[in-house]
Image (cartoon, rainbow, N blue to C red):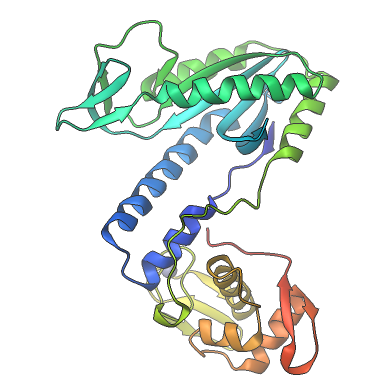
Length: 309
Ligand SMILES: [Zn+2]
């Protein structure tokens, strides 16, 4: 049973938006590519836990804090008295496992993926104990990309390669168990502790004036479109949405990039490339958000964000 679904990370959403609205610097482009690849790997992994029987409680994408230290977990599966912790890596290419690191053929070195697990597992263990539960934690590093090869690998490493995933989850599914109250309580408490408003301090910053304005297609990121009376249809991929959805989605994207700016009808009208007039933008914002202030100082607090998928 999926207790918590995966959503696109904030950093990726910011970089994605910036990528289509400006020219990212070389290192930012690389970072965008890495985040995209990482997220694609995680969503490729998700098809396996999704088909597990209901006694497997699946929690995706957790950011937790224990003893002042933040740690991120790609996927947890709670099954009876065991927690399976999965760290997902979407590496591709051939590597040698030497001296606790992955050595690529082009002299490129990736630090041991077990380091992250060795940090998060004890933090999770202590957090679970503090919450009053005693569970065994089994950690796995998943190499999700079928085009990844690791040579000179010691046998005792808790690694799962792409071609081993079907068998791993088939075996998980075969072990039947009964979801007990403690297991459900722990799953809910961990989800409640998830930090969902974390904003990394090192996000790229671009002045509002330099970004390309207009509404981006949420499916293919094109600005090209045609309008009907009520709808907006992407000319590149055919994605169709109501003008209201397009406006509120763009307002949310603007707020994601500029959380310090008040969401006003003027700001969102500009952000949407002045495609819709201020009155229409105002009506949409008023319908989908809490209104603060009066007259010219009115601003809106979005409450039903439609993030770019
Ligand atoms: Zn499109």
